Length: 312
Ligand SMILES: *Cc1c(COP(=O)(O)O)cnc(C)c1O
Image (cartoon, rainbow, N blue to C red):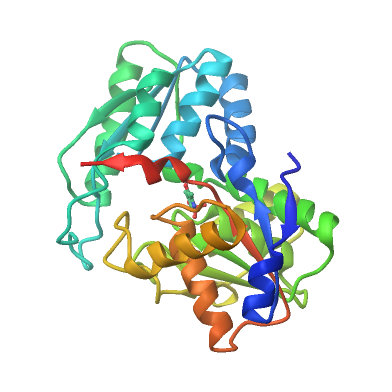
């Protein structure tokens, strides 16, 4: 870091906007992605706490678990993760589709020595409970455990993205809009926190069918307030979260997302992922087409490329 930030000349011409990209697919840590920024702080805290094992959770194809595995390898801490192929929210229900399958991040987790506990599909709450239970099991064995919330979305994770937004600002000046994916929330929370009270609009494209996520975003921003002392006091209504591009559900590729991945690949030679950045880019394309977005626009590439290599 700093990761590159550059213009997308061919797509800008095609779309009639001034479109730029922040390359957080290039952060490093086992093929890169937005979790690298959060881990810079989270791993430092784990090392300071003299943790012997880090425990987290996610979907089986979690990019966070893969990058955490790389970070743990670098500092010599065991990495354990509880995963489900396709965890879901009870109101939305389980999508009627097969999950992403094997390969992808699972191949890399195995190489990195991540200790995976794979559970059958269930709700997110069931996944969180099983994760706390695993942490308890290690504690009862006398190990020092450092638990990390899903996706690294603690206030420290959001803090890393407050810094990232400042990094982008220093590279290319102000944008009319910044478009980011939102799932566990700290990417969106940190970037929106930085731009709060400025002319830059931050648009989060939801990758989970959960409109209540804005409450989590406000909680994370309150945590960043404590870390920075800036007292921004952001409310749920201060976050722009768009629900129209989730597709069939969390972790399930969408037709629009897949088309957007192809479009960026064929116009600029840059690869997106089917769970987050592809869906988000499809949202950006639609918003530009309907003139809801225009001028100088920054697309935040959060990585995720390994899931392009999933197989049945
Ligand atoms: C985790 C992830 C996101 C979502 O970021 P959050 O901070 O969890 O909201 C977006 N894109 C990719 C590739 C990810 O792995």
